[in-house]
Length: 517
Image (cartoon, rainbow, N blue to C red; front, side):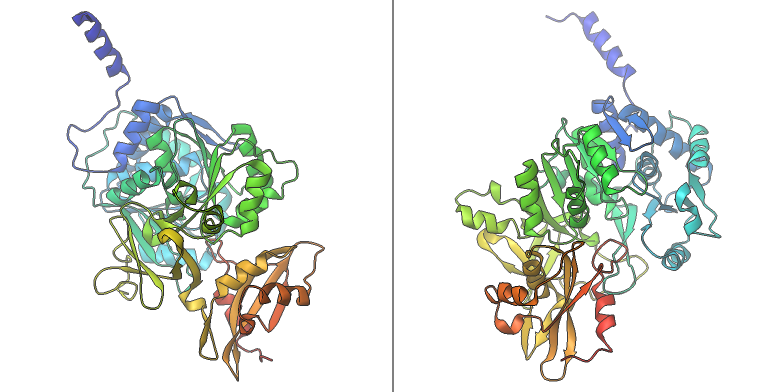
């Protein structure tokens, strides 16, 4: 039997490692995520490239100091605090300290043009703005706290014993902006409840489960739907966090993977494609990578699998869905033939837990669930929601095998030629299979006879060219002849939106004054 004295010693020992916490709990909140990381995984690390390494215990103390310093600066429940920053420990500290005071952290996209950022700041009127030192010249005239020495001085003034308050779980915690592919950026707010639920969903076995033995690199920025939830999921599971820091190049990311022995990473396809081009990259520590934002070309999936034995998990989501909405993991499905399973890796997948998905008569995906935003802040535009409360995603899909959804186009990118529909995404994936093709976008061009015809913009690898006859022959074996683009234009690169997606709106605009042949 254990003596009472031994129990008392153990109790005192655990008290030494206890963190300040409120006496009651009114629901889900980011405070619970932080406290779990401190309490259960205090020795685990948060690493920022070329900057600083913190234990989760130290990270928690800094968050409390920062929160108390912000309270002294007058930040109260309902206030807004904006950031214009990269993925660093400081940005992540703000992502906890601000919401844990009941205020809203508004993460501004560093790739938005300066006038766009200025307009968004004018609309939101935050109490404070935090800007990475290397980005200060992007926001002239803005009264900002520089993330650097000025930020560290603020943290040093705080109290690491500050007790974070108990908050209503439905209070907004963070806010991100949409990618503006169909109009001006719209602000989506996330409640404490939706963020915690989203992180728990992300850690489910059929989604993107993280383990205590993982080292996770969220290359996707915090201003992209909270880094797709990977920082929160890592802290819940005890995985270590490796942050890419400011202006990360492909070579620096590859070096970070090797130096920190990263096991899992998350990014858009173009980032992973660039990693493969780093000649001496050692990516052997990776076990899984999570790819979303655009459909990854089949060649990218094969390259990671064949070269490194790395499993690429294909997912789909929106700013409005919090984190992932669909995930394709056909290896978990029993009873599939090898051919069917291989084909499903190109699909966007099944809905994640707690999210429902359906197809409208147009084929558009509609979703609903507790992690889906119910409205846009500062906007009365309700056109994105059906009368019965489903979010219209703008993505057109078909149902593949075993209820996997496969995207075939964006609703506004579908080409109507001679009264029939042509799906641009299907053409892009096929053209991308040709050797030497780096990236491709297919958009409609006006045509006197058919109304619209597909027009392909193709960027080739350096020193490579595209054989028109080989292109037509390749497409002829996969799609109807009338789908094949009449014109293909070679370009150095494709324009991109602030979130890194191909800017088809700009491409369509460039064609408006051209005459089709």
